[in-house]
Amino acid sequence: PTRELGEQVLLVAKSLSHAARFSVAGVFGGARISNQAASLSRGCDMVVATPMRLVALAQEGLLRYGDVRALVVDEADTIFQQGFGNELT
Figure 1 (tube, rainbow, N blue to C red):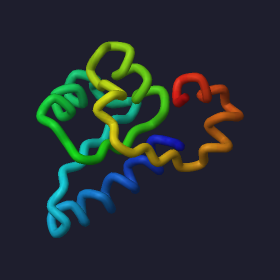
Figure 2 (tube, rainbow, N blue to C red; figure 1 turned 45 degrees about the vertical axis):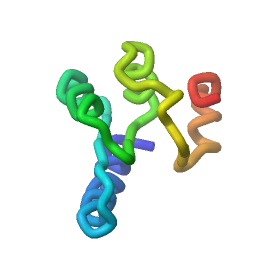
Figure 3 (cartoon, rainbow, N blue to C red; figure 1 turned 180 degrees about the horizontal axis):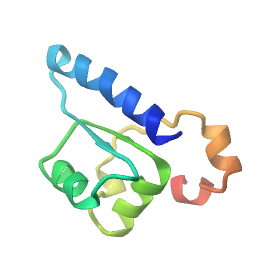
Figure 4 (tube, one colour; figure 1 turned 90 degrees about the vertical axis):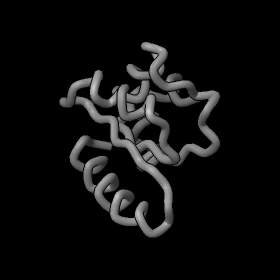
């Protein structure tokens, strides 16, 4: 998934989050990782991310996969074809 797709999903999630009472954070390449890390450190119920930024945050210890209760991977076949399978399994 591209940053543009992630941003679209984030907008929809944020619009739903107020009524459904959940918090959401977006983490994508092209933005300051420090701002995204700060957003994650405040805690959230949903993270919308691009694969490489998700992996980078995890490698830096800023996101722990152990805290994840559910993972939804859009276009999983494409992600695995592009070689991100090891990072997601």
